[in-house]
Image (spheres, rainbow, N blue to C red):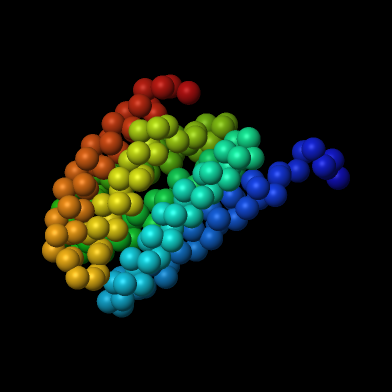
Length: 177
């Protein structure tokens, strides 16, 4: 039996619950993309990005995230980002070699995080990379009027997100924790 002081706070539990809910968005997101329901896919990706931000706010409010959350949160981001990236690659909208670099980076950092006792919390550059990736993908997937302009901006934002992904990976690995 645990005492009350050792149990996670309700705020931390809510943050972890949002992370789990975000993980569950991956399948409906890929199904919406492959089914041609771009509006739904866009909304699911937006919901995933917003829930990532909210669970981070809640975790900080609770005095810091859990080790479990530090491991699961980036994994759920990868699920949500990989689905539209692979779809965009299949449509020829983003080069496959760039997607390969991003996914290789994500697998490498996931392995590094698994070896960290703290779960390897995200760096500022890693967080910036995630925000830029979500923004880029939302613009690339924009299903409504003006899609040509938004897709062009999304395409141009994709490249700095790739650069930040590689730079943050180097920072994680160089830190030697």
